[in-house]
Image (tube, rainbow over all chains, first blue to last red; front, side, top):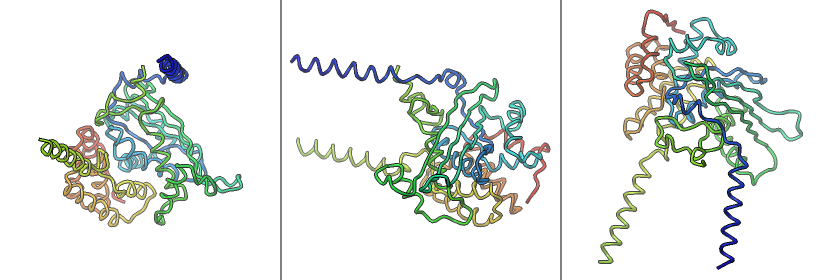
Length: 221
Length: 122
């Protein structure tokens, strides 16, 4: 009987320690604002691949929608800026929140920056790397509701046991059409990871989701 | 008595798994790549609107047949494609569908239709 008590005590201490070690992400702004609709604008791009912005933008729609947010039609939105003479992502990011609210009526704006996108030629084996950071801003107050950085890598050689590599290999083996770039398939994974739910600094579920307010990281308290 | 219980369990399991099967693998919306690919192509100035419309209309048909939901922006994007072909009737129809499915889009769609925005056809 004593043995069981020691084991249980050990487990309690062990898991308590696990929970305490994790810094809790501050979701207060996000939980207070409760945005329902998100306006994603063209990402700025520090990488060598011009198509990186379009890839990250178009592949962000699915994970964010599945999280439970209304996502404005990104191509239509981009056209609206174009027709107003604003073609560069940098300039789009400078538009006042007040003006964006006037036109779109969104609850929040998502600004993404692509830091790295494409093949890494410096390393011996060719690897494809995507680094992005995202910032969700409340359209009314300008407060940052959520932000996150994410790096996703695909190695062409080795690492066959890695689940991510296996998934990526399967995805990459699909037929690519002439418009895609070499990191397009990886951008789907990058966006899926960036906007994944149920982790310490993950974006919370939106109002359309059946898991709204049931995020695992919120129930740790 | 035992036979009835077993039957009940089996029936419950059948209903449960049938429910699982009819969901789009647990997704809220129907996705088959046509929407995502079209957005990417459009943003890269791909002018083959016919092909993109065709692919998305196939998805729209599936959505209708299986009674699933079209994703946010799906109909609005399809409307955009029709606009680029000069087909205003179909564009309007799809913008209406977008607003009907997602009231959050109403302000923006109204803006597009207002005199404030002069849309140029490519």
